[in-house]
Amino acid sequence: MHKALLYTLIGIVILSALLTIGQLWFMILSWDIFIKAIVTCGILALLIGFLIIIKADFGEHKKLKDENYLD
Image (cartoon, rainbow, N blue to C red; front, side, top):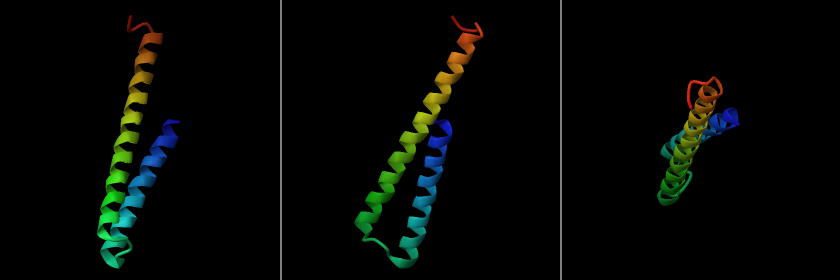
C-alpha cells in the first residue's frame, strides 16, 4: 500500500505539472477551472503525503514495540 500511495502522489505531481505547462502554452481550461484543479491536486497531494507519513510512523512504532524497545 505504501508503494501505491507513493505512485499516486508522483502521478498527481506529474499531472499537475503537465496541466500547468499545457495551461501556460495552450490555454486548455478557463483560469477558474484551472485554479480549482490545481488546488484540488495540491490538497490530494497533501492528504496522500500525510497518509504516507502516518503509515511509516505507525510501522516504525510497531517495529520498535515488537523488538521490546517500547513498552
